Amino acid sequence: METNDISQPLETEKKSEGLSFRGLTEIFYQPSVFFKDLKDNPKILIPYIAMLIVMFVFFYLAVDYIVNEQMTMPEIQETIEKPGMTEETMRTILHWQIMIGGVLFMILPALIAAGLALFFGNFVFGLKSTYKMILSVMLYGEFLYAVGALLHAPLMIMKESMMVTFSPAVLVADQGMQSFWFTALSKISVFHIWEIIVVGIGLSIIYNIPRNKGYLLSVLSIGMLAIIHVIISGIALMFK
Figure 1 (spheres, rainbow, N blue to C red):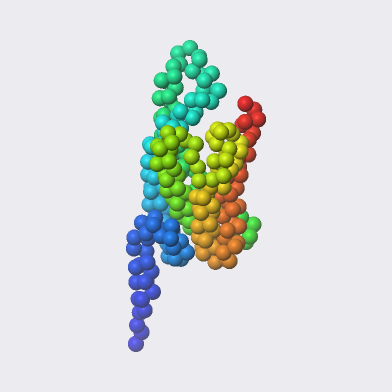
Figure 2 (cartoon, one colour):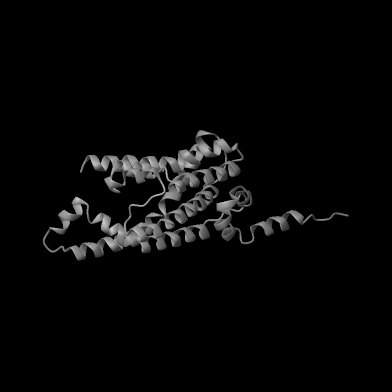
């Protein structure tokens, strides 16, 4: 007489219950446990929404300080001097550009980083995974980074300035946020490094590779985005 073993499906179902929301906390203290559960059940919507909500709160709290920083830029000052433009109007424009554009821009990094990780993992290293699975890992990493960005808000409010950072960029804060060295050194922040480590753990699990190779893939994807940002910022400064 044949019997059906239902223990495995029940165990899988139990693990998937609330997995999307569990990851929003477990990513901070037990990422390896969480990613093992996530491996066969990738989540996209909840981490995306959570990350965007956190970034919206960050920009809501930081927007006035960002506007104040941008108002000191020479190109903004030149625009204000043009007929029909006032400082108040420019502040309003910058306010909504930051609130709307800043949050919407946060949709892109995880998508691009997942594409880079897929390219290096699947095509360069000959491993096997899906874009959805990699994107899920990246989104939880981005959520961790977003929470780190939000932790800057109390410091900005206390200092009444955007010039706060959990990175060596604090050493060149007098050069301004738009400077090359501030941009470059800000990429070595506590939360950038933490994100790279956590994503590396996730990639090692979904690709079933040693942890050090997972870290390498994380650097080649998330780290590559940071390097590209620094290069673009440097080129932009050259043509100012």
